[in-house]
Image (cartoon, rainbow, N blue to C red; front, top):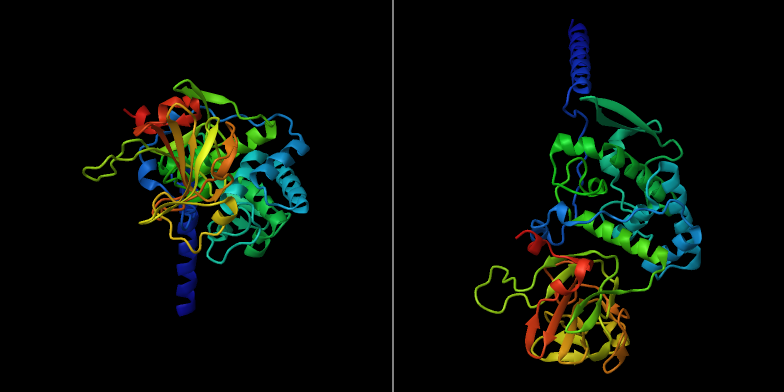
Length: 416
């Protein structure tokens, strides 16, 4: 009798499940196990709350036909420490898998750069696996028998779709290997590409510009900072692919200005004069531009380096050569961290702070667009990687933001 009751109970449960599934597929609410990322990165959360997607121009298009040699050069430029063998593997692997799943290879390359800085070994404390830090737990429940099952809204109802992923098993070991990581990253991007519009309607997440946001958050997008990082890296890759030299983007006091970082337009995440909730004082004396650790910082105009070194608490500033700056283990850095100051003449100086490395030394002449260091976060523990840029004319601080044309986007001005 007990066995019969159990069988009846199981049968009833299956009937209820079938009815719920049919209702969900015919209705407008998603019933599947929701995909939620474990620890999405938000390095400037408060600043990004002021940003709306309408401040951005359209992203540059992917070339209709991609030259493998130029793409290899672009990957090698954004990932400069790779061996030739690894560069050959990575650029060809990205192109192959992007083509297989019909996704943008520049996006896949940018995702690799953003998630791992092109380093194949996954650190023990990392979230996700391999070059693109794939979240195995988020996607595994949806991959069965060589198919990724997902749903999109069609004609007012959820429609089941399947992506053929039968070439490779989906597990952490395969995700950790560079070749299969590109395969699975491209496949997952394809799913997000297909689902993005439906998911945004169903879950009412934070407004965003690109389906890559779902990579970081899952079904419901909760912010735009990770998206901005990847799209900035994609713009850099496209610029390196084209091989165009830096060009003037604005002017100040009769001096032609070049962008301080590549991949324009770039986002200002903290504005000139912001007192950051503190009473008194001068407020923020420059602007902050978000970026990746190690990406090139360029001189905004011709000039002479008048300081290259580190801010030391209680001691002022200490001059360093690029070789000395490579090891800061014995130096406690002050708020400015590693920084460079350039004299452009007529009392006009520019300052570049929180650098991760130095590429110039004191009293050397530099040209506009020349690399002077790497972007970083030295001297600042609370914020993520960014460039703090200051303009000084004599003893006066001047807001740099209005003088770079379309190369910098200031959402704080746009919101007024």
